Image (cartoon, rainbow, N blue to C red; front, side, top):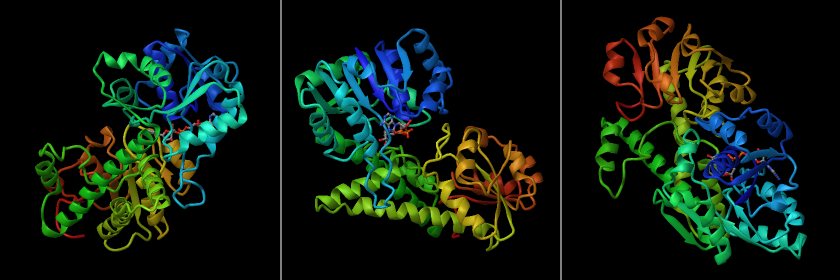
Length: 438
Ligand code: NAD
């Protein structure tokens, strides 16, 4: 099967590479000429475990190529995946910005030759695939094509494993031909008995938003329980375990913290609310999820301030972890982007470390002093705040950290450490949902 993937970001690059790994002939196309140039030189522009060797292997095998030209790849493709970004619109109204998707559709349209399936892999509001179909038909009335929806569920940091062994593949199709082509692409997954949900295009589009909104709901729910635990003296980890062992609830996504971030949950929950609003349907749970998430980030700032004795003015704060989660360099909507400015605004000096995201972070948080190790960040600090639970922060040399700090204050927003152990080491330790009031 010949495949063109439009957009070579986290989703497009991983999908394209994995399709090549399945044995297909894949061209990844991006308008970012610098990105394509680097990929052609063998440099993978994002940090994603396992991706670099898989890109190298498939390029060497002649199955994977990169281009900033749509020709000749789009015309030759059996299936074209649109995997461009759909960020929240700059207007700030929560709508997804579909301009990249529509630009891609306009670029594809005149180049279509034989029957082609144009698939939206980007997360897009219900009805977008039909709009893409309209654009293509307008631009090229002779084009012989179908549109389809194949939302992507991979997680950054585990993207290859998620793509190669997904919980399910969702295909929104409206013709047997389109279904057949998409099934052929994913055939290697039949061998590992991956469930396929084949449905209408609108249903597939909504499955993606409903899934992300539900996961965000679990996070906001456990964060509220954590806050309640702090007031009543309960332990949120035991609460989460006690709940999660119930098979109807499930143990995953019940980990308290500073609130969700990343390139998907924040924008997708807002976009779902806009879709619901446009159709006159109340989605009050998702509204609350969004509000609770914002409140959780503000609560974390208050927690840090309280740990510093009531004010951050003039205090040095060591921040460990900046990316929105471990194993990625992605800073989009990272909790650190809300928490750090709220502290520096009131006179705090922030020294930070992240194993992969400092380059990205420096563009967004120029006021921060970036350090080459967690220990360097802690030198002379009045408090250390663990924001992202990278593995290397799970086994810190705690006596060394304590000796470097000006005050032995440790605020653990990911509950990586045990309160009694931290106390025994002489830290004033704050975490989320495991002890008394703020
Ligand atoms: P990204 O910002 O990392 O990459 C998007 C790429 O598209 C960029 O390289 C950009 O240059 C390119 N692009 C934009 N317009 C183009 C055009 N007209 N032609 C060719 N290339 C173009 O985005 P991402 O994180 O990969 O997300 C892509 C989509 O997948 C979004 O809709 C997102 O919601 C969804 N998604 C993301 C994830 C994730 O974990 N990142 C997971 C599932 C779904």
